[in-house]
Amino acid sequence: MSKAHITFLLIYVDDIIITSSSSSFLSSFIKQQNIMFALKDLGSLHYFLGVKVCRDASGLYLKQTEYVFDLLKQFNLKHAFSCPTPMVTRKSLSEEAELMKNPTLYRRSIGGLQYLINT
Image 1 (cartoon, rainbow, N blue to C red):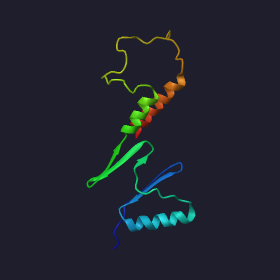
Image 2: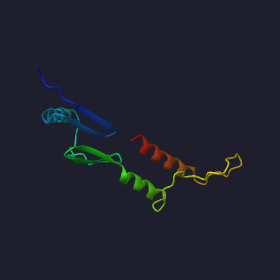
Image 3: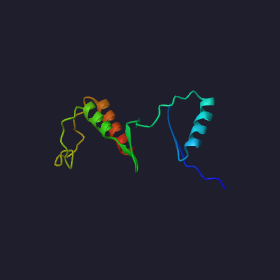
Image 4: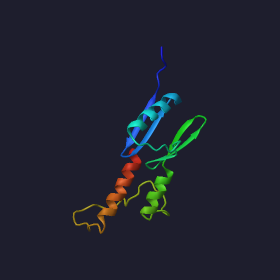
């Protein structure tokens, strides 16, 4: 009876992560894919789509610290302090509110925060 192999394949546009519980299966799979597609093996995974990958004897750890600092820098919040409620608490919202000067900046910041939360 053959031993089952656990293999993961993650594809995002032109970035691919392939991993397996069997190094021989992994090598064989990569060779087969390289016949059909031009692959470039970058070695061990260290960083992928804003997520840093760290290893030790007990396993893999995923961190997004660098991505968070990049977001803070991008939106000039590098020196901001944390707070339990990051908004004015006693102000009512009304239809007479002033329109945003740069809604694109707001959309980019919300998109970056959504990506952070969903990954």
